[in-house]
Image (cartoon, rainbow, N blue to C red):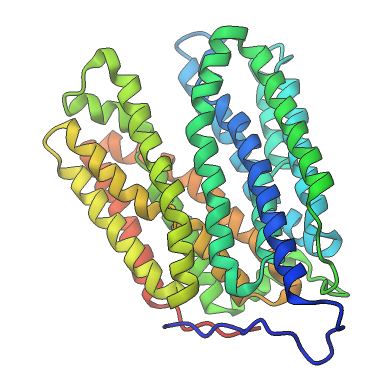
Length: 416
């Protein structure tokens, strides 16, 4: 084992009424409720993506300008969220993580509903920016679960939460695309708002936050940033999040074109591209909990070395395949490992952060992930403009190899 784990035993000063079974049941009940809430919201969030470019044209944008506006509209929430998520994390440490979860899902629901009434693409852009600023739903859920779950089960809890993202991202586009054709784009936005309201009330009535160990004077954002600057392992893991997420999403903008280049039939190109994306999410659902238990048992560092090795090999092989049929088993292999990247790093950041700063550190971690979501597609555009499409997969492998090297540099953990 490469990590030293806290025993999680109660101290002599703990009150006798705070027994272990109720505590265990509490964090598991919270995890189940947050999982379901996030799954419902992710169905809605990912459900609008398939028709969002079409909605932009519906708002009167000419065909020649639609691709540019589509990229701007899709990226807008990530831009705002990457800047404000650390602020929400610090506020969560001060006022509680549950209020942040409620604020986030309510912000998501309100902005999505208002998008149904957008008169033009400029208003849609403003609403997408507000969505990123007011929401941060996934980051808030990560902060809540990471702070409310026992340290010895943090890897499993964060990995389980990851499966709700994967499941929602697999099912959402199928439902959203169908609803967009059946009831129209505007009504689909309204239905997404309804789903978010359901998530809001689920969290409101079921989730219970233990604030008994909340710090008297929570750290401010500037203090959290200072802690990361001082602590080498925290800096390293934030960089791993940014580079790892950039590597995962780097090839997404050119994937249909790559399949087409490899001989995929044009008539079913969209279906084949969608299947290549969905298969990663499906494999993540099954593999993430296993990786979480493995990390809890033998340590984060050893687990991440294995995970990143698998992804590097898979990405390099995708760059070398002779035909599109080879892509699918390689995507399955990558999917088995990709699901471990974010949740295990989030869990390890929780273990290595002081108790009064965990929400704030998770906010910085989510911000690093969002920056990866932004930088990956931008890097892809630069690469394919100057080089062959295959080089995008090589670049993704190089980024993941860098994460592999960084994982080897992380020292063993120390309980704080």
